[in-house]
Image (cartoon, rainbow, N blue to C red):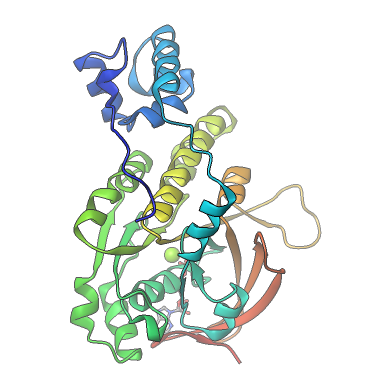
Length: 320
Ligand code: ADP
Ligand code: MG
């Protein structure tokens, strides 16, 4: 555990937050002081149905009492970085592209069109995480937030066999929650910490990160609200990754960019919020016969590059 124990104030400790208000706030995911401290008054008022004036006061009070004095020394950060571990993707090529595999305490995003292999890569990561450290795994449990209903235990069984693992053991270590809408998804990520107290979860998958947000917040008018919620959600994920020294792996779709007339006209959903919060971004393109081209787009310390992987019944392999 990386995070130190903090004395916990609840939202009821804030002036102006009685029982009824607290309940409204909790229902909408504002269940701790930090969430309130970083909320926008308009959001808070619209989502929780409290007057905007009251929302401003609550946020001000939350900012006052939130423990945001978390400056760390470079030495502390270096110590935390020493805990960073890498999880194999199943493909040496892809591991190399990522500097050794999926990194803990970071968000790794795979984006690409339908059928590009995002969900396959997530299934493989889940299987691999249960493997021993010598095999490139974490010997851990896995949490999957499934927003597109594409989790298939049958695929886990095939991929487990591909790794000579006992599928029953692997399946028991993978905890899957369907997310029915974006708020449900946000809530599941917030509650993930509870599950991590019960099981050693070192990999959290969100497949897909953006699809609910995309379909629920259509049009210019709701864009800023969508981005704020996505931002909060991603920071919850990152926090889980830091606290639990866990890998956060997410998928994202692409949409046609009307403003690009040459080059690749496909852009990931979620704009700057997703782009800036994901530490590693990998773009997947279809090749022939189960081959996929993976391109590293964005990383704080790795060069851009491309590699080829192979989707197979046994799972993710090197492409040749
Ligand atoms: P995305 O999540 O990006 O929409 P998927 O991860 O679902 O795409 O990828 C679907 C592709 O995965 C299929 O087109 C196929 O190439 C490959 N695939 C899925 N299941 C199998 C399997 N059992 N054996 C081999 N390839 C498979
Ligand atoms: Mg998918």
